[in-house]
Amino acid sequence: MASTSRTRTGRGRGRGRGRGSGSSSLPPPPSTLPLIIEEFFIVVYEDPLVKKELPKKFADYLDGKEPAKVYLRAADCGPRLWTVEVLFDGQGRMYLDKGWEKFAIAHGVDFGWFVHFKYEGNDVLTVKVFDGTMCRGTTTQTTKILTMKATTM
Image (cartoon, rainbow, N blue to C red; front, side):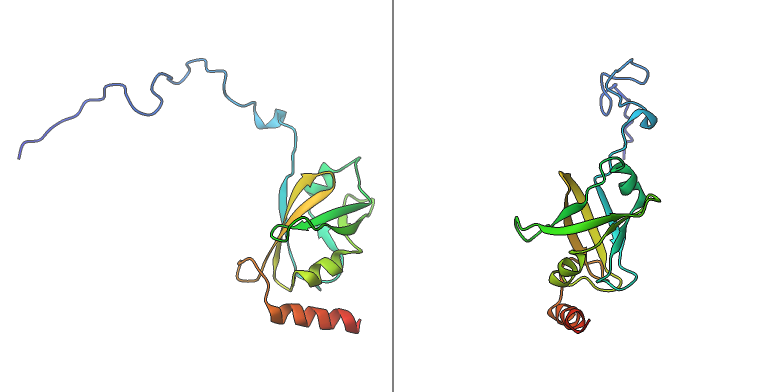
């Protein structure tokens, strides 16, 4: 069997642009980019029906624009918006308060679940709910349990 050797001809990845070619298409260094928080998630470690703290970075992002309420849109439920009051504690923390309970019940949020938020602007957050197995969706049983709990409070 004859062995063949290949030589590089200058073709392939990066053809026409070598390192140090002076390309100005590089993005600016990260320290000069504005901080944009578009997506985040919370893990439900406590009662799923009580107010929920959002990440501090997101609260910092809204600094100076602290809305009195936000509008939650479930990612797979069409255009319906759930109005949820927002609390800021003066120490940089932000909470979803009144209205969160109704949203949590309607979407079956339970202990150990992950709630993914995407900030759409204009105080609107699109929400995806993942159960403890990291799968999207709710179970009828969980929704029944949370509904019974909410009605007995």
